[in-house]
Length: 602
Image (cartoon, rainbow, N blue to C red):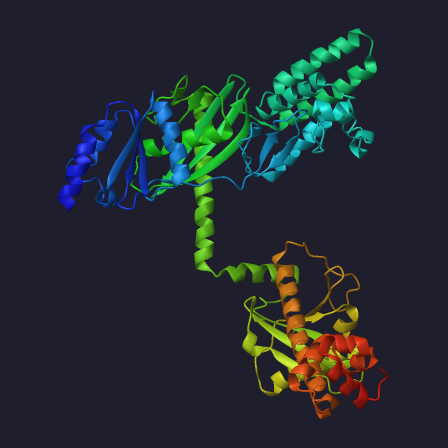
């Protein structure tokens, strides 16, 4: 069977051309398991079947091949681009893993009349121009703020077709009145002027800030010669903004005009390739890609994969590429240079350092994840945020539950290492408090809970959370004081309205960031205590309702009583309801029996 497969594959190889192209290996199910490129298709594919495979994984790959497909292209560059797109599309099992950057933001100039400029994380092939990706969100914000200061670009998403503007479909919005937009939606700005703004935006995004400054200086001079000093001053302010932005760029050398720089760092099968975009002597963009080797590809192959992929993403037009070593590929109108001295060599060293730094950061993160459980970081954050003496590995949270004073209950939930320990949850029936008194109820349950733990010599928590503000917190603290536990356990309160955190003796609450892990743990404990308490409270009300006088009424069974409870919640609510309301739920015959029994009007 194996010989037949090999014979069949050799026949396919025998008819392969010697041209550049890509080849695809398919398994017995017809699934693509590998995509490769070649200057000479016949020579490259034949190498897989001559002698022993280079390594074990390649041997496994060859053993899985059931079909070979190929595609001829004009140049090696075309083969590289096609290979890259096919790897992304099919993600074959035995190809390198290119870590995509879909989560990074881009700046898009939308393909439309009076184009909008905004940030996005989705790249859509609709003819729009995308710049990026930007590793840092703040870079995008700085650029968008810069465009807002320099140009009056619209922010609305109206369709500004000629027909819509001529028919006066739109009205100017607040942005127009704030002088952030010139009103193209109502014909107050022509396309020619607006497109000049877009040209400026494109030049800045390409790193050509110097071009924009020169252009603006010409306009400023023109206005000045015409004695239009107000307009000239407006242009000068824009030039000042651009100069400040240009000065923030990392200047490396005024002699280096437009180059792409690639740094390479590898450890075992993980490779990091850093990219630096240098325009007019300044680094205007940086980006790092992670690649995982599968078939023990050479460093030249891995670098070539990265170069093609990054340049496609960035949409780079640079013709000079600085590389740490020759990638052994040829790209049309592109020259590769491996600098040995001077400013270009320093650029390569900087890019390699960036790639190495990315690898070390990844290794550090992996080490932290392996060396300690994920909850430890959260607990350390909680200790810092809440000024605790030790990690809050044991947290307990209390909540009171009553409905208009009926069946008051309380709940206590327990979290161990930030996770619910449901077997240790406890319910409390309020014994010493009459009516709906949240403060007194909180004091009772906190006292009872820790009095029992002390008597049974069980572990005490490091942190107690009470659902409520200063009132509930004060009562909980009083209970701890009576037990001699004040100062030995930290107790805090969380108020629902603004999620304020209250500390004993501190009149000002703590406001944690909404994305804070500390706040999320506190909220989860509070919500879990509320859920647990409400469930118990409903059961208590249901039991009291079901075990009420309704059971004594002939013809009214348990299912009807449960249904009435779900609808009316209490016996008092049922008695206050109209006959029609009750009859519509359970029918006339049963409604008559209930109203007659309680001597109600119907």
